[in-house]
Image (cartoon, rainbow, N blue to C red; front, side, top):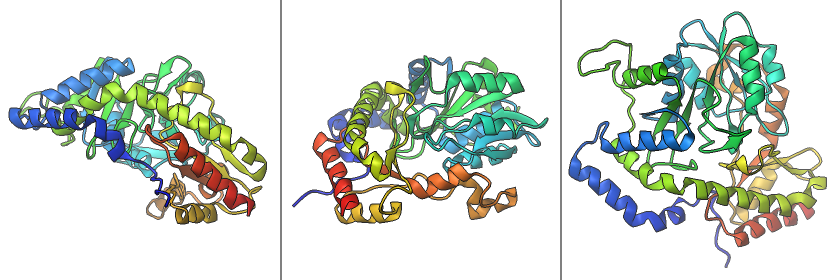
Length: 377
């Protein structure tokens, strides 16, 4: 009997690190420095260096990284922030929690990344920042993004939650603009054992303000100079991340190689309407997710393919089934069906296939063979 293929296999990925992880967590238990402890400082320094940034400030989660990071960059009530409708809801929530006004724009159909041409039409005198999302592990083109920001005098704050060490045009994710937010949710390319996030920046003033507002707005104990909050990366989670960070580059390479295998095996299916999301970054794409489009040329619908793969023991996902502008909780923003056609079309087409560093060639072969069998029936 064939074994099921999981969407993500964290257990298998963590198995070789079991003793290192235990020892690192035990060290925190013995030190007892559970809040902003030594492991946090070590990880912040290591992650900043790895990304090519000068400052890294750990926070409680990726959503806080966006919200507090925008605040540290000076974004406030009344400011407009441009972001794509095709993203996880946390991007939108981060803008709202910063007190700013989110301005949604469409994406490119082939990549799912923000469309800067349509974004240009959304710029107003109130626009203060653009928040590009490096989706699925692929970066928005840095040169085009910087040109856009320079032309419109905007801050670039990157949502790099899915792009740990992704590269494009010589830039690492998070180093294009003023600052960037990352998530360490367990299934990320670099994930901890719970929630966690970080902001990186090369601006010392932004870094200093971030350290203050994440810790009750206090640069020193009981002295509260900013309207801050309690959002600190947990020391035990930092200890986990310290163990895993040295392996990240290799894991990303494994993901990219797995994606190339998928691409090769799926290439005959393009004429059947099965088209992978386009990679414009080569080996710089770190494939947090491997996403295909089940287009109108396909003989079956996306949901049918997903269901039949599940019956065959192959787990898949949809990232994301409802664009931000159509989410029930955010109808007050004033958007409606039809406003962002590419985002809406993709939400009905996209399907994320199993992807993780230790996925085997045999598993990839089986996934694709099963897709071919389902489509060909």
